[in-house]
Length: 439
Image (cartoon, rainbow, N blue to C red; front, side):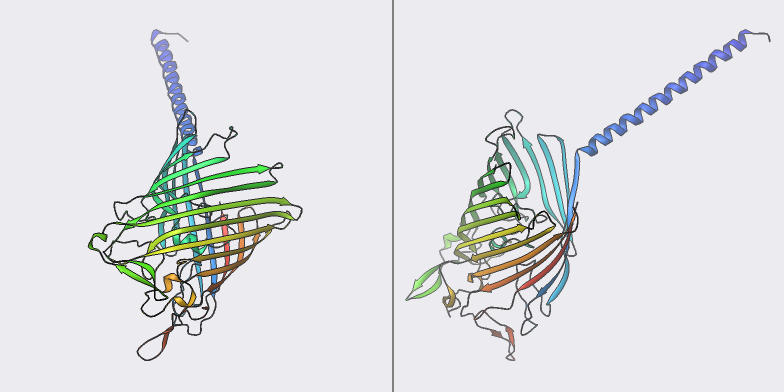
């Protein structure tokens, strides 16, 4: 074959075209690999977790099923309701951290009642000593132990009555400073949290007043972590603006405890002070018969509220303010059976929303005392079985006792009893069966 310049040119051009295509393919593959590497790196910084709690509940049978029964066991029971199914919690949590010094967390709660925000905060740790951190957004209030103890780990269906009353929703909106030495330090066992919050839970801010809340706690292990002891002291100071000029305080008038009103015009928009102190202690020991845990917490102070409720008002609607001196405590005992999947718990909690008035002093005509002043004690007994690493089932009974008062039964125009009152212990025990899956 005769080789011509034309054929040589075509051959060289073909080689150049092949090289160009190969280079483009190499660049494309490299680009795809680099993009995949970036995507994987981003995903590795994102942690998704959560849990779902599905439960059935049975309320002790009332004499008249038309009564509505108030309850802290997951919400009130409507008239004619003695049993119910529900999704108590359906949590989905996203935590993203591109480096150890910063993190963003968003958590939602989805149930049959709807979907709502639980957490949304940013956390930054200063890079020099790594001692100070700032958290800003919606986060758990740093008060006591039970508030921050996750509902997915807690051995009882709900938190104590006092915790639910004094700190509804557990969370609040604001900013928090945390001081804790790095894990390599001998002082890492001490932690201080101080926060400035709106004081209205996961709700819009109502007034110009802000609350200050803080906790100093410790956490130590002994004997190769067979004994763990932790505890802390907490303080809360703040309050909300009086919605009108009518402010009630308890007084003794001729031997009768009653609320008397201060109706000074200057009261409106002043601060109704919430001043609480708390102490908590937790001890966990690895015993021959299994891990045993004892927890306790005590809270006392002043809680401003309304005539019919011991909780904060959550709206700016004009309402009278009642000043109440409160105290409450709870004690847990949790026992694991050897190394098995079985666990038992006994819990006793007491909450007195008004320590200045007792028993049959409540409900006296003209005293303006009522259901918001009644003391409760609750004995809880439960059994938990862990089906696997992610799933557990809980059987739990709440045996509730209210103090006997002079709050009589109420009747309608036809003489039918519409509420049994509180002259004796109400039939409000609750039994819960709960199945939880955590991921």
